[in-house]
Length: 500
View 1: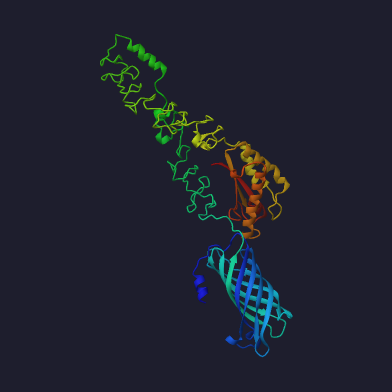
View 2: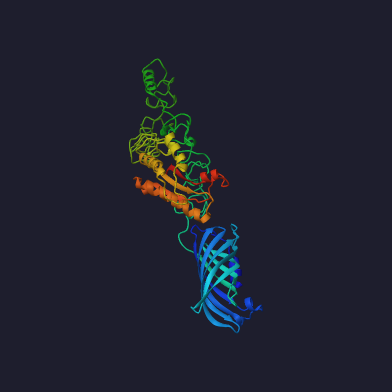
C-alpha cells in the first residue's frame, strides 16, 4: 500500500509513448484456498510466484499481453508446494485520460498451466488492475485476478504488484510543443515559430524577437521594414519612401553636376556681393557670414574633404563623404558593415556578388539574385509552389505501411529537381495520419513515411544537410476524422521549402 500511495503522488508524463512495446515484472500472491474451499485463506495458505510479461499497445485504450508465470501451489490436504509454470494471452481495456497519474484497466484471456512439469490444464483469468506513471515510460502496476479452471480445486485468486517499462525508440522530443523538435529548436523551452527555428517571432518574419530590432513589424533588414528597399530600415531612413544611400541616411544625393557648374559661374560673376570674401557670392553662399570653399558652397570645411562642417559627420577627418572610407567603396568606415571589404552602398559597404541589394553576409543565396524579403534567394515560381501543395496528397503509400507507391516517384522527382535548382533552399518533410490504428502506431507510421520521402529525395542527389523530416502522427489534422474524405485528407506528407 505504501508503494501504491507514493506512486500515486506522481503526475503522468508519457501515458502514450511513441513505441508500443513494454516489458513487465510482478511478484504474485496465490490463493488456491478461498477460491475452492469457500472460506477465507490465512497467511499460511498464501503461496508466492513471479510473472514476466511482454506488452504491446494496440491503441491508447487497448493492450495485448503475454505473461509467463512461475510459482507454487499450497492447498489444504491436497496440494503442498507443487511448482507451476504457465503462459497466458490477455487483452486489457484501459480507462485512459490525458494527464491522469493513474490508468485503471480490466482484462480477460486464457492460458495454460503445468504442475510439477507433468500435468497441464487450461485456465481463464479475468480481473482488474491499475498502472501508476512514475517516470516518462515507467509504471508501477497493481493487479487482482480470478483464474477459472475446469480441473477440481484449481480455481485461484491472484494478487500481483510490480512494474512496467517501455522499450524501444521514443518519438521526437518537443518540450515546448511548438512543432520544432528539441534537437533543432534554438529555444527548446519557449514556444516559438518554425521560421525562427523554434524561438518567439511576434511578427513572423523569420527573425527571432531576441535578435529583431523591430519585433512587432515584419521586415528584411535586421527584422525591420524597408519600404524603399535601399537596404536601410525605415526606422533609420530619413527618406523612407525614396531609395537613397547610407551616407545620406537613406536619402538620395542632393547635389548634382549642374548645381556645381552653376556655383562656379556665379563665383566668376564680379557683379554679385561676397560678404565673407570666400569667393562664393552671397546669393548661392549657404554660409554667407563664414568663409568657406567653393566645393562646400561657401561654408567652412575644416578637414578640406569637400563636405562642409555643418553636414560633415567627421569634421576633423577626411573622406570622400566626410568620413574615412578605408576600402573606398563609398560607405564611411563608421557605417560600413564590412569595413575591410569593398562593397556596394546599397549593401551597406559589404560585397553583393549577385547585385540583388542583399549583402553577402546576410544573403542566404549570395550567388543567385533574389529579393531581400526572401533573404536574397529567388522566390519559387507559382507552378513550383502549386506542386508542393499538391504533393501532400499525390505522395501515396501502401496501406498502413511506409513503402512508397510507384505513382509517387514522379512528384518526388520534381521536388528533388526544385531543390537542385535552388541550392539556397532547405526542405522539411512532415508526416501526418488519421486516427485509425491508435496514437502510438500512427506516430511511428508518420515518422517512417516522412523518412521514406527523405531517403528518396536524398537518393536524387540532394545533400542531407538540406533535408529534414518529422512525424506528427494524429496531432495536426486538417479535416474531420469522422468521414472517409476527411481521413483521406489527414493522411498526408507535407513539403515545406524555406530559406534559413
